[in-house]
Image (cartoon, rainbow, N blue to C red; front, side):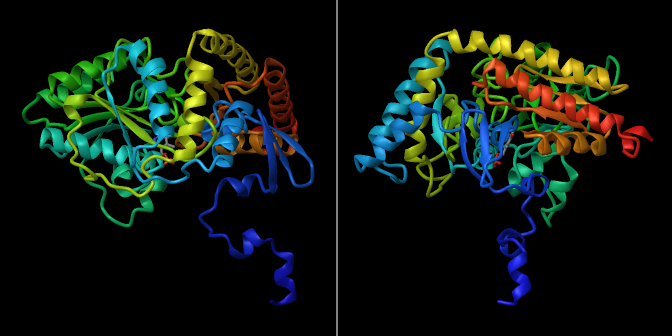
Length: 429
Ligand SMILES: *Cc1c(COP(=O)(O)O)cnc(C)c1O
């Protein structure tokens, strides 16, 4: 190897240019516990990114870790295709008891390949198979993953540009609040679907996030979601709620649509469903639409046995009574108040999102990026989202202590203050 090659890190030397988060946060991370993550130089960061909401219960939850270690020590099954395993049974029992039954949900659980995108693919395929229709309604700023089928439902032009092929079978409609002012985009959708010359093919499904995670924390109102659910029914389409990022407690309740009075035909889940950051995805589907034949939607890793172990602990530990959820509403308020302080520092800035999925639109991607980058230097990991990356997004683990939340927000406000008061920054122009 030429000598100078040694001065370039292994990541720059060998890892694909497709790498992304590590560019803005170049430390090499080594250990993590709860809401803190430590790099190989011993610097500890507060984690307000939480694996993009894949670590809602923090890093290395002690109970999940203990259960997993015990399972491995006992030569528990590590990979079982979709065979019956005791760990799958235990997870399903816990999920039925603590999540499905209390909500009166008769949904079946389908384990897909372990990524969110794969669950979305399966959901779209089911809707098309059930209805015999092709068209799927998805919304502006929606993010549903980047495999070709899911990507056709994703709005982001940068991701879409990577497809290298035409992305078909989806009609884009304006999400709640897409137009400034009072425009009711649910009524707009209804009008488009009703008019026989509206030009929108009868939909197989309407697919939405109730809070758009990657799309800039646009939170749909419960009334809007309810109206969309009615429209799906009226127009013979399945309602698919993509709860991959907004679910598992992120919005303050287990499902993001709890308390909205809607019952989706299909719910996609991934990210935090394992509880431990292990890859696991699934969809919940009403029994009458559970129509795939055996392995028709196939996958070698349908169900990750280690993830079943931790997912069961997550459900039992956090969702078997109301105490965790009650705690979340207090934390949501703290996040809201802290972000209001940040918004007050930037002219025109405003709050977005809901629950523990809130942020501030600072009006410019450059400014949001600079604030996050300064926060990183000061020991806080936080990311942006939105069509211009203009939204500073807080996705702290739901288990973050009040003390640590306050500490994290102090760093964030400090970082914003540095950036906004520095004479040379874009903010001062
Ligand atoms: C992350 C995400 C996906 C895609 O999940 P992957 O595991 O990255 O494929 C789909 N939908 C939503 C709402 C997401 O946030």
